[in-house]
Amino acid sequence: MFNSLPVSHIAFHDDVDGIVSAAVFLKAGFRNPIYRLYPVSSSMRGKNFQSLVESMNLEEKDELVVLDYEHHPRANIWFDHHYSPDFGQEPVSNKSIRYNPNKLSAASMIIEEYSKSYQFPKSISDSVDMVDSAGYSDPKLIFNDESPIMILRAYLEKIIPHDMSYCRIVEILNECNLDIDAALYVMKIDKSYVKIIRDEAFKAKEHLVVNNNMSILRQRRPNQFPRYCEYLIIPNIKYCIRLTKVDGQNVYFQIMCNKWHVTPNEINIGKSLSKIKFLNKAGGHFHVGGGVVKEDDVEKLLDELCYLFNKEEPMEKYGVDKEDPVEKQASEMVKTGSEASIDSARASVIEKKKGELETNAGDKEQL
Image 1 (cartoon, one colour):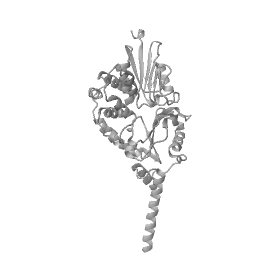
Image 2: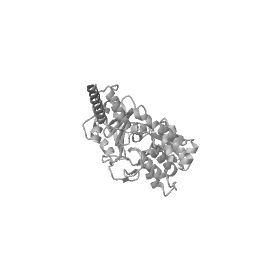
Image 3: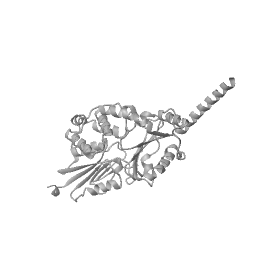
Image 4: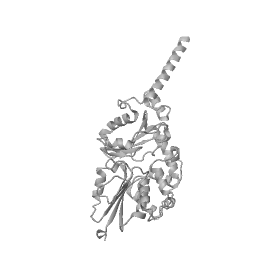
């Protein structure tokens, strides 16, 4: 039966924007009687995404839909708002392509596209825009807000990535007519997940390495630590970098700027990453970016980012004795945010110890 009918193969980014985009498409843009859902993570870009499309075994009558993800030449329908060097900064709109890097989310693009055929909940577009563009008034809001969209966001931070989980959320949202609160009730997802990510945010503290304007956080797995926790722990950090090993040879990296920083970001992160030739399909928006780098090139990438964000020569790569009293105190000062960088922290500790030595010497002379 299925072999004789056209099938819509729907690939969507496995975050809030991608999930809502897929639910919106099922509700208003879906045309074929049969569909299959394919959640895709950011680390699947490039060759991995090509392999996924090949595995779909698409026939000519089948439809490929790509939502909130990179363009594929076979796509019959593509909605995306991530900057692509292949398409540039200007919006593109034709029979198969809806591309607009100026939009805050792909979901809002799809809602706008199909608003004439379906009456969408009034708040859903604004809610997804806020989450995908990190349009929060304060990072503390992320770890305290218990509105439906933020509960869903917190839940996605904590689940072990699994295709069926993402697909079920898409389909329940569709069945609940895009009422996120109702969908959460059906799926038994409650505000406890907001507390969980708040508690786990502070666990990242001992793993953070800070160099001047930027922090580096290495994860054993995706979503080990909640996003934006760096800004909750050390508010004066301007750029945060996360590194997650995805297989024996590759590392997925994410870069974000602190939009709550006292000075605005003037670096187009997505465009800057797209120019680094040894990276695999790297890119993003003005304020966020990511991609895949070979494990052997991680240090080279950190050198590039150190120069980009700090306007200085690469970080020192020689090892330090973590048990050394100066190093231990300096590391603690950086983690708590009392010093902005490891270098300034070391200087502060040394100066303090120098003062203590001079005081002790004076005491001995008096004796």
